[in-house]
Length: 375
Image: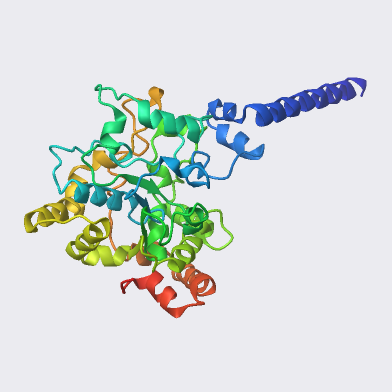
């Protein structure tokens, strides 16, 4: 009995020491958790780490932080899994009028970077900003020359932020000279696109962030159900859809905002390219327009899929590696995938959520589901 009590006492001390150690790491160096294999992100999250995902911050667009932006800059703030990479590539093609030989699109995160993406745990926007302007790529090219080339009529940046973030910084409205492209898609299609997304991240990227995002389940049905629950109101990813649409719908008529629907863009790519070019104030000849339309098409992008797997040019330990696996960002791109991915019961639950969160305006609800209409 005495030996048992002694053992319990020793165990209690060990647990107390471990708790103190974890608490100290969480307070003073939380990013050390990411170095723990397989469970690093779990430890980070359990001890109060920033919300999912841990590598995204909105600091570049906080009030007082936007002096790095220039007039005519384009921020492609498309909803997650709703055509962001597609619209980034189209914006680049329009600004170079389809001339890839002179202005190569090396990688989506090089030509059209994502300022909110922390590429090395522990760094912040101040470091990212400096590196964006000073980094030299492996081939000796200045990183800045590929995203801030003096010939470009505008620069292009990726985001997934809601309109409120930019409004608070005074970037949306008549007084702003920054342009915003927002786009959403049918909610079920978006969730369906999210199903394989986590599993498509490379192990090299997961290693940086303590095994985040988690690997996909063996059962795609279980993975689909999990994504559905996470995307429904109250779920961890709900803001990516419902709040996103409500946010950008409110500012759809602002002069420096263009709100598109994925379905409309897919159904009429030539017309979409024309709308985008007009919004970006770029005149395309008939031949240039045809070239841009071809290159913005799914078949062209699929043939050049490795341009869309996201390098981390600001992380010197990630050279030659990518965030996403080959082909994962040009997987299907179809309309209606959600109808065949989810059960009838899940589709009914989603439809009710749409009415609850978007039904205050019938036009908004119909647009979210089907697209249609110009603003």
